[in-house]
Length: 248
Image (cartoon, rainbow, N blue to C red; front, side, top):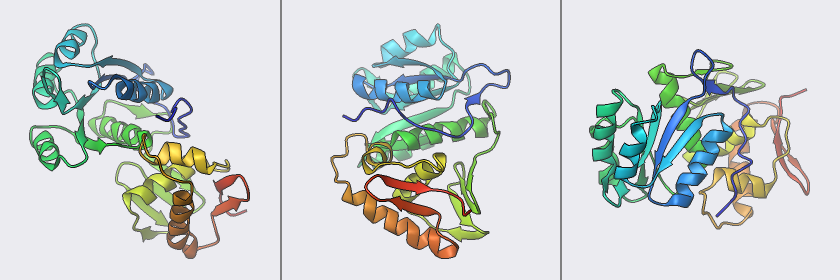
């Protein structure tokens, strides 16, 4: 499993209006995955508590007031849907993001129908998960950002992390989910050379065993959609990796 200790984010840290840290409860019976998620959120400056069952989560919730909960649908002593209801009985209106199996469409529908705020499917990109959580908290009014905006900008290229809209010089750009995550990672690290290995770790699934050639393919996809609308923004640093930077 890849090490995500170096998860990068150039967007402003999300905090409460008084500057105190956001608080998250992460519940998953796969301890290594719960730890990965917690590590990513702590890198964002959040306070995080993990639990691995319904019973443990409810015990934790008595002494910890989360701003948001990340809940696995399948737990050893129950499920995330029931846990959400129980947690909201203790912490009214608690926003919830569900973790679901890739092919469990019914779980996703049930989660949102039951009042969940969002979901991501396993395996997932930690960058995507963090961005989804930030978006939920912004929309709920619980969190404010240092730059108080959901937009990333590099020159005339704009990416909105909440609406998942991308445009260049006012022209809308349609991206697949993977293209969006790759562009977001590049734009969160402007003027910084990112290696293929680093991009694989951050953009693709946490247990993805792919080859670096997939990065080259998706960089070419992005260039066809982004760099055809103006002077090139995405550059190759031969033998090192890729960099996005505004036109001089």
